Length: 240
Image 1: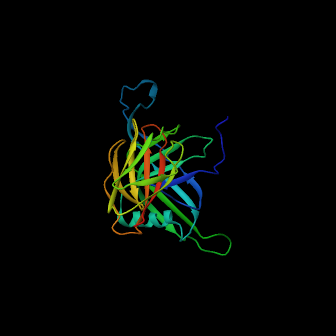
Image 2 (image 1 turned 180 degrees about the vertical axis):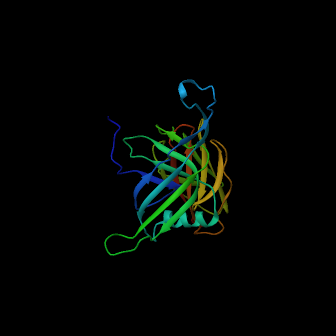
Image 3 (image 1 turned 60 degrees about the horizontal axis):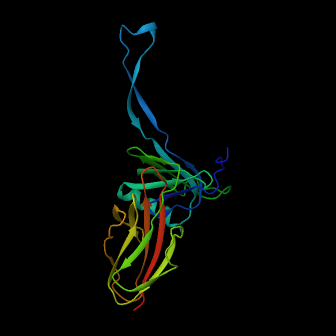
């Protein structure tokens, strides 16, 4: 039972944005429809069935309403737009597992049931569409990280187990990012906006830096089938 754990440390993210102040998470509950194929000749007076479609169910969350939390604010935006997004529920590290699913927001209550006895809560239900993925190991991550379009210094120097970086450069109005990976794909987010998913080793779309002082937060979500994703974060700043 070395991988058994309480829930402290579990997280839920939409794309690259973690949702804060969660107190309870519910992972997908998969259920398969059963088709009744009983006939007059069924043996022993017992019904017979065959498997039908798999219902991926829902993911749920509850927590404390926090107007300063970017993840909770993003949930409202996703509900309003009706967008389909990738949600990743990561269990505590000792468990070493995660659920990744494509979801629509089915129900969202921000500031529900206000009273004097407890913190103001929020809750949400996510409708899973398609088959969710259960991973029990973390993907290998990337082996190199290149930023092009201007000379600059990545700080700290790239290492596979380091996930947060800064990069400063001058004069150039746009840059691109290329993470080197073997069997992985990566999804790039710039300031929380999804820029698309491509294979590891592919050059990203150009990221604009119109004027000196412009900065962007770049997230690279590196994923591999059957494995929990890794997130690399780069704060890129044009200094002149």
